[in-house]
Length: 259
Image (cartoon, rainbow, N blue to C red; front, side, top):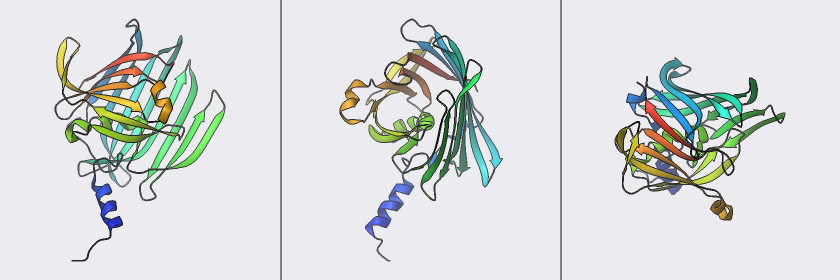
């Protein structure tokens, strides 16, 4: 048998690993056809901030079957009504998903505030990003290298649900933002489960801390927290923290499966 080079072994190992962003990423088949509802409230007084729905549908598309995840949200921020929509398209093959594209738009007070698109090319290991900030009259178009340590921020919900199954206690990754910028962060999975009370019912969950990995300034940026069920398919059930960094609203979001 021919001996493979060290570089070839590393490449094969990376491509086979379940932590290569969302490339050939294990996906629970039970979630296809499901729908989730989330309600978000401000921590300071429990007042309503927003609501959202997320649906997972299998469709026939270019190159075969695709998983389309459609998210819609609405609420009020600083006295202004907003609504947003995000469409994530994944190639679905043999129970695994590969990121294909992400498109999103936010409307504030009836006017489009921002819109963006990301198209992933896994052969070239790059993502084409187009971002429009209509309030600042700003347009960004760039190509971003992707690799085993990069996950689009819109895909974190799916990545988080894989951590308990892998017992991945400490994971360093980079998040790709809609404007093409990236930042480092660290996931810390709690060693032991805890019990949450949501809608009057109790759930055994694993807590996940997300903290920035930005050197010295990291100490000034608060962590955010997620909880996933401590049983397959490890569904995300709660989020707690500031939704956009220091100075943004500090919220609690509870998530439940409708079907």
